Amino acid sequence: MTNNATMTGKTVLVTGATNGIGKEAARGLARLGARVVIVGRNAQKCAETVAELQRSTGNQAIEALTADLSAMAEVRRLADEVKARCPRLDVLINNAGAYFDKRLTSADGYEMTFALNHLSYFYLTTLLLDLIKASAPARIINVSSDAHRFARLNLVNPHKPPAYSGFRIYGETKLANVVFTYELARRLEGTGVTVNAMHPGFVRTGFGKNNSGLVSKFFSLMQRFALTPEQGADTIIYLASAPEVQGVSGKYFVKRKAVPTSPVSYDQKTWTALWTLSERLVAEKQPV
Ligand SMILES: NC(=O)c1ccc[n+]([C@@H]2O[C@H](COP(=O)([O-])OP(=O)(O)OC[C@H]3O[C@@H](n4cnc5c(N)ncnc54)[C@H](OP(=O)(O)O)[C@@H]3O)[C@@H](O)[C@H]2O)c1
Image (cartoon, rainbow, N blue to C red):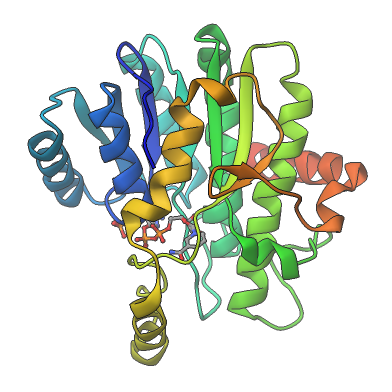
């Protein structure tokens, strides 16, 4: 699909842009002329990605910041670095995410999927919100998944569900991305900042390959028939740049179209409860 938008003069931050969908979103937006700041967890991979993106797009205004986004102290440091480097932030793309077959614990003692896939979106966004508002009209895009459709949120004890299921917690975090988007859209009304969630489709990336041999092989096998990362990034690039979605907020997009999400995602009490819980969890990790 074509996109006649221009991003010249705009600054975009993309998390998880050293691979897969995030990398292609960064490439597409760099091609449209944006200054692109990519976030990855590995300095060497970040440097290689910047060089490759600069080469393939001809845009030299691409740079990298490193952070392990599952650790709240690193998210805070990242936000400080973004504020120091970028006088404006027109588009924030929360994309870094993963599936964990076995229960892992983050540096803060939180369940890893919840920390990376939801808390990092919440914390990075809220820390950067003043900068984003000052850059309005501005856009936030949360990469979610249709995996949210099978999920319910466990807000009572998100770190110790009775038995661990990687698919269940992954779906919960992707539902959290949708719920967070809806509550943030409500809070951002009238600010000129929009926020939307999206599903990239089933995409051939590094997704799932952080797990042990068999699980990783399962993902590789399944992904043979999946979309390319470029196709997966298309709706992100559209939401970040297209003039026709200027002002559109609080929606969930698949293939450039706003579509309804699961019935539970519309429960406004859940929106507030998730916000309050997330605020508490990130506050507990702030230095005194
Ligand atoms: N692939 C699909 O079919 C699919 C479907 C629906 C939704 N999604 C969503 O799409 C998003 C992107 O996934 P993908 O498929 O592109 O996967 P991917 O190829 O594995 O890319 C994930 C990106 O996130 C980064 N990342 C992982 N853990 C991190 C951490 N702790 N701190 C900082 N960065 C970290 C990775 O860094 P490294 O390069 O160092 O690994 C990589 O850049 C995720 O939110 C996922 O839930 C994917």
